[in-house]
Image 1 (cartoon, helix red, strand yellow):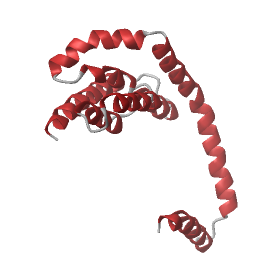
Image 2 (cartoon, rainbow, N blue to C red; image 1 turned 120 degrees about the horizontal axis):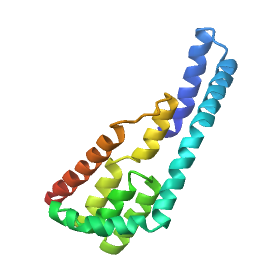
Image 3 (tube, rainbow, N blue to C red; image 1 turned 135 degrees about the horizontal axis):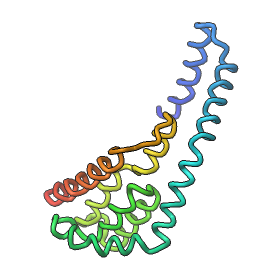
Image 4 (cartoon, one colour; image 1 turned 135 degrees about the vertical axis):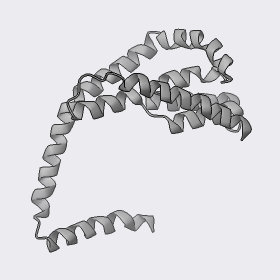
Length: 168
């Protein structure tokens, strides 16, 4: 059934366009042009975010931050092994997936730590990437409170996720 959804959707759009007397090819090329302009406009922001993430990991700042945050995580009842995932997830989705795989390999997929890590990775977002893309498309340069509030909400979600996973 799922193999037919995309072809049926495409055929349905073409039939609808023919009924409405819309030139499908011209509309498609116009949409492609606007998409390429969007990619061209947001590429510098994405490149900067990706470079900063890589510098954060390679420089060793991530490891230092994890060491500083371990007592705080322990105080909040979160496994200190998740500090690096909580730090990396707002910066890099792929990096957090790699860390999640390491947690699975080290502790097993059914362990409390692995369940917490999976919920954190699955329910949070790469905040800096998303804000760079969304705010650059609408030409907003002053983020003001958006990033601090999003980071706080992401961290609060991680704390709550670990609390809930404790009872599951």
